[in-house]
Length: 420
Image 1: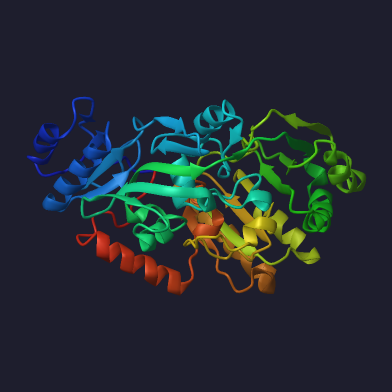
Image 2: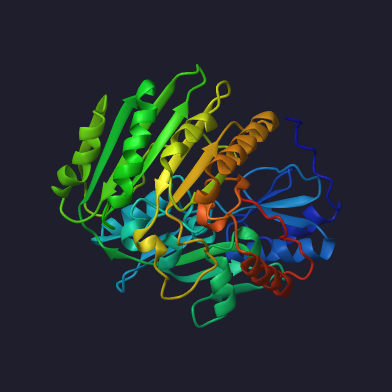
């Protein structure tokens, strides 16, 4: 991969930034602005607009010689109110919210990964481990505070700027730089979980058993199967299962799968009150391709196995959707394709050759599955922070998001914004 080009920014921009930022903020030589307050974000966006410089959110320089990177890591405050609402700064990740909420006997509905920032799960949809029971993380949002491309700090809710509230939840990060999120919490309760590991030679049998067992699960149970080809070439298979309700329900939930294919190793238990942390099983950080399915046909199992490739390391997940994922939220959002039954993610390495191979693998899988995709095209080049349901918007949704961006970002300085 070619090295990142040194920043070529207007010479007076950094100097002006330093006079506008708060004392705890910093501007690095790599054109990264480490903000300390929401007002710092406003200053960055306004100055960037005047100089015609793009603004991106992340933690390091990007491959763009004329871009300012806004690092919101320091916006890390988390509070929980008596009304059962959590307020999280843009730099806050899910464990911090879960720990703060648990102290009050409450729990947050998380996104897919504990490593994700809360803000990323809001803009990216947030299909977490209990989504089939409680819906998406973006469904639980009470308010979002963000700086739009016109340099305005806005607080958006279902009644205050409702169109932007619709778009920022599941519409991706391009509508503004988030500074804080407010989420409705739920009463905490014990959570059952299981991690079943299988040898690589059993991968086909596991996936065949899983495709029959998973769709029959009740909404209080969720599951995914992960197939991984390691750098040394060996194949592994892992099934994760999470269920709400009574902890002893796990025996009944798991029995058909364990009877079909005996796991090589397993860990089944009950998590503490309010612990909704996602499973630690996951891919390395990289770009990924994904597709949504109405079903996984019996003859599609071999196609999934072929998608792992025979050479390059690769990681593939098939995740069960349905349940509350498919229910229309009380306040509509930009999240789409909620009627899909399964989500497939194909993840490869970060190098250009590996990304191209991952894309080709996902395209071939979609072609092999045919009608099972429901006519939905694969989505390529995303990170895990944006969930599958927020990657491929319908044309009408894309047009609506574009209109929002045009209204709030007239100079298009946030166009193509990414999160690092």
